[in-house]
Image 1 (tube, rainbow, N blue to C red):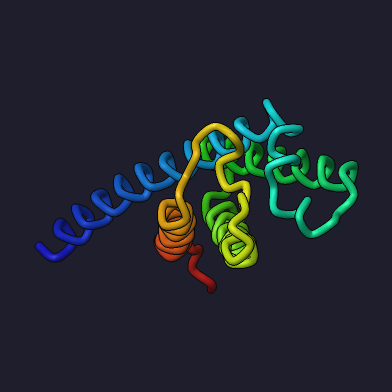
Image 2: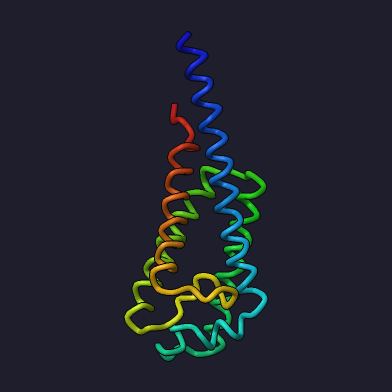
Length: 147
């Protein structure tokens, strides 16, 4: 009898992992595609410009970040090494949290969702924390057993 209950719990956990993985993939894809479609607008609105970075360097950074987000979203959507992708997603969300912490005192745009959605400071923080928590939870549930 315990074997049947363990397998039911495992199936439910796998379903939850699937839903969280799909949600993470959707957020990363939307965020990355929003930045790829209008990198110039994001570069001008970004706080990094207020920090006196060269515009060419800023555009390159925005495009690289957006491409990374799209790739991460596609890899999560395709279920490629979900354990690794969820850890990378968690680290990238932590990087966005640092960018938010730097940008917020300057009242700037951290560039979390490109120019697609105008998010207030609390919504930006909430989105980043959801990405971090979802990535962390997925990483815990999909970690491979070390023999």
